[in-house]
Image (cartoon, rainbow, N blue to C red; front, side, top):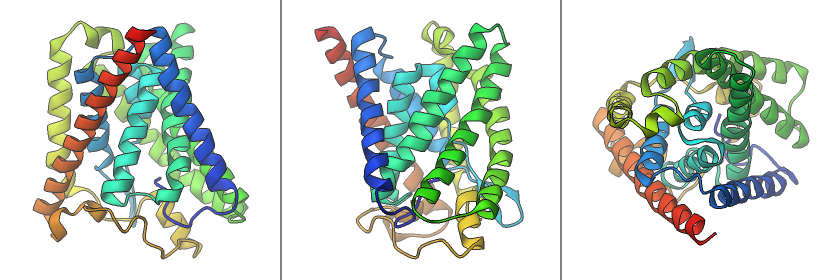
Length: 295
């Protein structure tokens, strides 16, 4: 679902960037104001695991792949404000290090996957739990909704850019409904294994499981599907996918380390990306904690 360069145009990029920046700033303020800042280790592990999970493209059907967003997964473990920041860090590094998404599209990607995916998706989960739905059912439904929200936002952004129509939007929503179903099942299962925000705080075992998930995701990354993701496939089908490169300065473009190809190159790129995500998230969490202490 990462939007490539030149996919959106006009006022869409600056407006989405402004909305994304406002949402991220509000999340930072909420963390500092409430003081509910996750530990640096917890925040870093969740962020790195989301990065690893997003590397695992899986085939939906012939010629199309998808990957988890992980927004509701992060929200269930970190709380909504921290989850928004976690996804934003992942998306930032994916853009700058791996050319995964256009640099001018970063605002829209953060809006769709962090603010809507983690933020609104996490809010849906919290609402359902308050209404006495089961935790697993609430998590699954919220994860499903989070993907559909991101897909509808993507359709709106394309429409505002003068691209698309009923047939394109129907195709885009249709293929993302399949991804939403996978996101629902996978998120409920992963959260069941790791535990909720409260149970993770009291259990070192959850940290070990989360670390094992990260290692497993990185180990499996060379086996990820090479098919275009659902968004790229849809745009290609309607001859709307631009040829422009995403970010020429990315050192590990297309998740290839040191200009190499093959499984080892992908594995090394994944390890480097996870380490960078962990390090930046750790530093950010420490900064959030200091800000909360001052307030």
